[in-house]
Image 1 (spheres, rainbow, N blue to C red):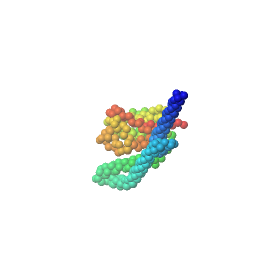
Image 2: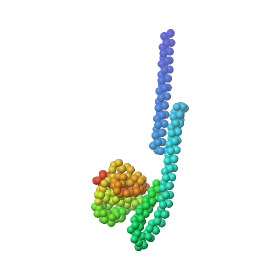
Image 3: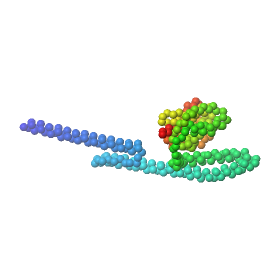
Image 4: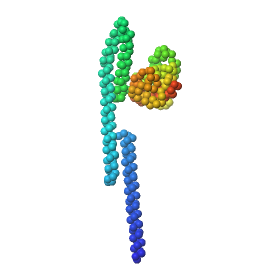
Length: 312
């Protein structure tokens, strides 16, 4: 009889041990699942850059405390984002205000300079130089003003059906005299048949003007300008090519940054204001496209405007 009780006792102990181990397994599994859910939720918040919090439905004090600490960190992140956004908008607004405030007096100065230059006087040559510099300052102000409006979202760009070939021909014709004077070897491939894209005429003309003038200014040593269009559904690619000094790989990612000057990467003797490519890139993005740079120093530099082809 005693032996039977011993067997029953052992069985009971084994059963209780199994129950305890099973409960521990269930607890660990449940804990792992909850931690995984917290991790996945946190990852979703960070990837989507949302301002949400991590919610945990549990009675476990440790998990509740963990979620609370994570939410404190997310709250600090939200505050930093808000402060950064506020500072960025204030900076853009200040830039727009400064540009606007400078534009009016510069217009008046240019007006007076033109009047003085038109009068016959021995100082005409000096006045011409002063007027030229004033025009450069005015152009810089205009570029600051344009960039500020673009970055603040105040420049309205309406997308319409455009004949890309026509606009490209017009843009190249604008530089015909300059290219002839500088004795450039010009190679142009623009299809005779119209190619349509969704875009804004003024914005696209400004983009192309910037890229062509940059190729002439910074790629002048190569005495070559290439211009072509190709279509790879659903995109249109406009290439502006020069064979000048080129752009080092170290600058390839920063050449479109605001106030990055091309003399940093190509020719230090040539001065630039570092805004033209930033504006061009921003305008291309506004058109739903992009500008891509590929450069092999002293061999070939290609700026490519990528646009979406118009689909009726």
